[in-house]
Length: 565
Image (cartoon, helix red, strand yellow):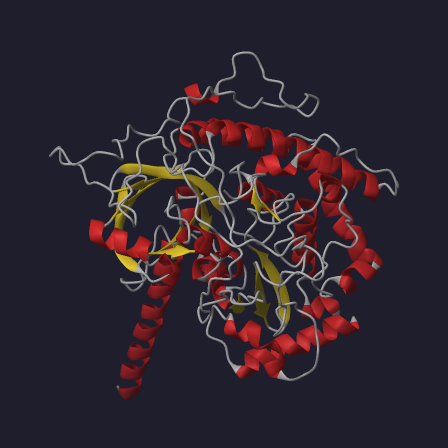
């Protein structure tokens, strides 16, 4: 009888555990086999949020005084409470905060704009709350990118190669039902990302910030580095829409199919918005609070006007080259120095998951073996790293390990094996300085100036050959084979009207239109330059017709080719 009772209890306990596991798997829209293994889990938000056939509609509902207080103290990056409607479904008591490094400090220093990037944390105030399984959603303001497409394009390339990378989609952002602007929505690299990519047996995650005064992971602190951008003025002038062509690989840049007009596509226009200059006529609308200083944005003025005075980089400084005023101390450059854990403190300070000294020792052991070229497949997720290298090298993002900036990546470790996860590409394709020639003909065999981490892979004939295969796929299959054309056609059909009506935009529509077409040409020429290198040719692509400043970015203190006023 006693044995029978124990057996009954054991059976009940096993059944309870099985039910819980099934519930978890069902919530994530994955299988029990996936959840129990090390493979990724299919998540509901993959389709609910990141189906790029249709932009998101995100309505942030927030007390006006809280909204204003958050904007006034944006540099603190503190969470506030809001409700969020996403495609008509409301999520309550969601955490929201401004986010960013240079972009945040620059906007905070500029009295003419409050267009911050934001982070929505669904479980900040409600334990276990998610948005279709997603714990955190990032809303990027496309700062320093007149095209509004660079980051989305790079993530599309990562998806093309099936790389471990964030999902993306565009989003029309509303504040208390008033249109705020066109943003890029990204899957945050945190718990849900790890579950989707690696299952329940995921490892440890770090976001090192090797730039002086920067912000790393959850323990990092924000400080104004004084390296601000200057936005060109949005004059609010009347604009005429000139959509980009629906390009086939054989068509020339700027050629449009007859009758193609993305602005007329059904469902693409945002709902009518009320004038931001509404003085409160009792119509029941919830006004946006005024910005500091009492200035109130008006519909279509794009926050134009006098720009705040921001410091520039030292004269003639090239942030992508040696001598730039940044530091890669504390291991953020991923180079092995010694066996002392303190030598890699910047990595540990940037922990995203809770890590221990034992976890840190595994990372240092991996660094040492990688530097020595020992058992690389044991200590590196080789195939994913080769894909990461290919997209990163193609996109020429110097605000990263490709320059001397030891940041803008995540370091993932599982059972002693290291992997890198991409982040922050608004300054890709020349947005961080350099000539058009240096971008389009950038050396694919020496793409990482800020680290030796990838050297042993490039020195191995087998791995280098696979890396070149991925580069050729990007150049010939994605860019020249129609993937790029499909991306531009889809994206412009979705965001042209959103950008045209954007009341907080950093750029006019005409600037956006010119920048988008320039980006298309740059990417096509970059594919030609990569192909020539893969074929062993010493010939270079002629980049004399390219003006990178049209696309915005940072170049010795300029922003979009305009000097600070």
